[in-house]
Image (tube, rainbow, N blue to C red; front, top):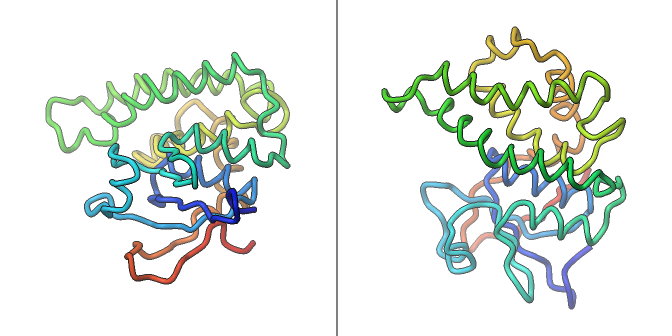
Length: 218
């Protein structure tokens, strides 16, 4: 699939960014073909900044508009095509999970991740505050394999990249934390062919490069 009037959308992305991962997962699931422009956060291309002054990824440039919020990219891609039926989810439950993930959980996750750089931050405190949200996910995953039921939906895709970041800060803590169901849920996502496809490495984009397309064959 390509954009309107045969124009291929442009996707600015950074491989490890959880917001970009959630967007790429939806684009790949929908088989929406984009020209991938991998960026360096320390050297953002002027073309991306002209498209979106926010300077954050993901950014999708369409013929008629620019999408620079990850959930907007997900919703647009899955609105084009949703073969896995990810959008068939309880809307209020999913919205609450997303709101708390992108709000308080992400706040404490960032402070936990970067506590070594800031002596005013207590890593254990920030970890424990973030873990309050993980405990909510664990409660849900006790009864079902996924966050809103027995199959994967958009909320799972939107949240697991952030839990992956949390798990990666202190792997020993994560392996012994009281979240066995969340660990299994995360492991399933990280071992999925779709995730592996979305984490394919590409060199940073330069304006004179030949186009690189996403999703890669797979």
